[in-house]
Amino acid sequence: MASLVIYFSRSGENYFGGELKNIEKGNTEVIAEYIQELDGADLFKVEPAEEYPADYMKCIDVAKAEQQADARPEIKETLSGIDEYDTIYIGFPNWWGTLPMPMFTQLEQLDFTGKVVKPFVTHEGSGFGSSQRDLAKLCEGGEIKNGLSIPGANVYDVKDTVKAWIDE
Image 1 (cartoon, rainbow, N blue to C red):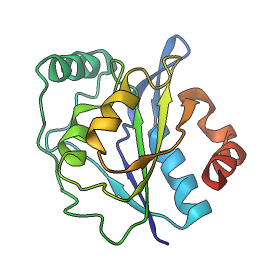
Image 2 (image 1 turned 135 degrees about the vertical axis):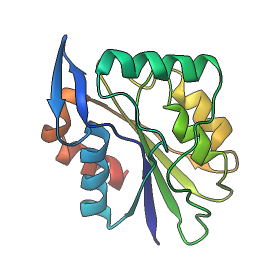
Image 3 (image 1 turned 30 degrees about the vertical axis):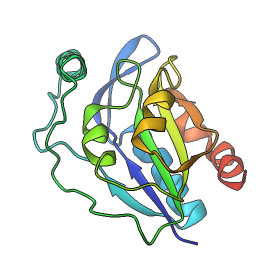
């Protein structure tokens, strides 16, 4: 059985427990790499063709406008298919209550029929928001398992939690 992690992650200026901090690696990417290490999964990072602003406040304004417009931003590289995988991990930060819009761009192009889908989200208190409802539509035909919700500030302390979730 082969597995794949499809994820979106943002480094740079991010929000942690009431303050802005610069991080070298996005929180979701940290979790994606744990999954790769623990499960041998391949990684596919969804990246927008046009980078988000480095300034966190400007970034969230762009993200909110994309969501309100139901935009499908162009992405740098498109994953064309997932036929060779049985399990698909889908990871993202919670942006305005759901997945960042570049994830919609990518996921809508894939056929999840017969796949096991394991979502994970990083956040600062909002958990999955409405993303699970959106994932049900995006991953139609897949068997969506219990998701893993991780506060961004805790990503470096949850490897055992990730392992237990993978093994569920």
